[in-house]
Amino acid sequence: MSLIKTDNLTFEYIRRDDEGNVEGITRAVDDVNLDIERGQFIAILGHNGSGKSTLAKHLNAILYPTEGTVWIDGMKTSDEANTWNIRQTAGMVFQNPDNQIIGQVVEEDVGFGPENLGVPTKEILERVEESLKTVGMWEYRKHSPNKLSGGQKQRVSIAGVIAMHPKCIVMDEPTAMLDPSGRYEVIRAARALNDVEKMTIILITHYMEEVIYADKVFVMDSGRVVMHGSPRDIFSQVDALRELRLDVPQVTLLAHELKKKGLDIPDGILTIDELVNALKRSR
Ligand code: ADP
Ligand code: MG
Image (cartoon, rainbow, N blue to C red; front, side, top):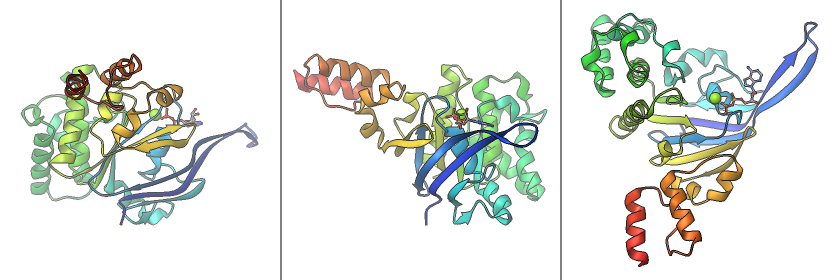
């Protein structure tokens, strides 16, 4: 059974005036079909306004489809009786860590989620330790979150989500507000969660470098999934991505330009090592 499945998912935001008359309709998600297996690392790309956050909110039963259906671990999100279980199954991490951290001390913050779930105290302590160690923040457990860097705060938010033992984590541009080293820390933590803990990760981002390790990439435009495939499939299509107002990783772009100049190198180069090897072979 798929962990996440959407069937012709469509969502419209409806704007009304003071009398309740419909003023405008924005179709933010348009006929999206996803089928995500447990253990996958999925990336969702798309420029601003392409519908990524609206889609993400359907995976956590924050929004319900206007048309179509979403199942999380077999539970239909439109059935309100499932909401509690769905939110425990699919944890969310948002852009701004300051809106997600409520505790005065790191370990206390991470413990809030399991505490709300009614987890016994002894187990809460175990979960806090395990989660903070997973994201590399255990040594900061007694610190105040206010004093941490952006990347550290975001890792504490992620620990707070993992402490609830979800089956998957949806991260909606978790690195958008971070500096490069913070971005690196968060992506490394996300990859470790997937590699080591086999946690299913849905990473929404517009930083291309962050998706090269994904199992599968979906590209959104105007609410639709317009491209999907492995990172290599996606980044082989430099011109199509540019039309969608998306960049490609710098090394992919360099390889693409060198190829256009006549060098014999393949499409979809993702890393510097790959480019170096391709250049050696092309001589
Ligand atoms: P992304 O996360 O890719 O930037 P969003 O899902 O936030 O995209 O937005 C998709 C579309 O829906 C955009 O046109 C946006 O203006 C519109 N939208 C988003 N949130 C709302 C809202 N609360 N009310 C009305 N329209 C919205
Ligand atoms: Mg968004």
